[in-house]
Amino acid sequence: MAEPSAEDIRKFRLAGERQNFEYRKIEILPGGVGLLQVNGFYPAEYVREIVAGAAGFLSHTDAVILDFRQNHGGMVDGPLLLQSYFFKEMTHISDSYNRAENTTRQFWTMPVVPGPSLANKDLYILTSHGTFSAPEAFAYDMQALKRAKIVGEVTGGGAHGTKPYRLSEHFIASIPFNRGINPITHTDYEGVGVKPDVEVPAKDALLTAHILALRGILARTTNESDRKAELEKLIQDLEAKLKSGIVEE
Image: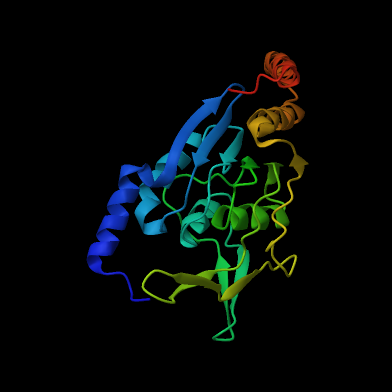
């Protein structure tokens, strides 16, 4: 396949801009829990300002939930930029082995990111069966590093990168050329997906993660009786909501 032209790249970026590069939703949930919904990953250079702004918005929360339930893939450095906000020091995230070239490339978090760090926040990642490729890698590597808890469904299992090869005027074959190697597990999630720490239907994942986050905050709250009472009441209400089947927040 030919390399994309300058016009192809311009159109690709413009289409992304019109979707805010798939950064779809950000809010503060009751109890001081931040929520960021990302439905796709574009190159880091496209989204630096968006991610920095999101980090600033989330900087005063006590925990963060990343919603990848509708995220089906994207560029490698897009996830890496977002991951970098959740570490205090440069961290070895993953490796990629290229079979044709017999080379291995390492991926590390970025030493400096714009905006405030989120390294001290508890982190929860929401997944669905449709979560695929780049967001799977994000979740898998953060889980292996014990930096995040995954809540939701087992993901799609697309860990191997592919390249398109034109077979004829009307047919293209997408053939794997590399595989991920996590530095902790020494493997990847190809064909099996990422198994959540807390497995629940995707529709229940946000409410479940919100409750987990609040329990974590409550466990750290020792000298504020009013705050403890507020959190206990909120957890009780959310658990009743989850039990009743009313899951929209």
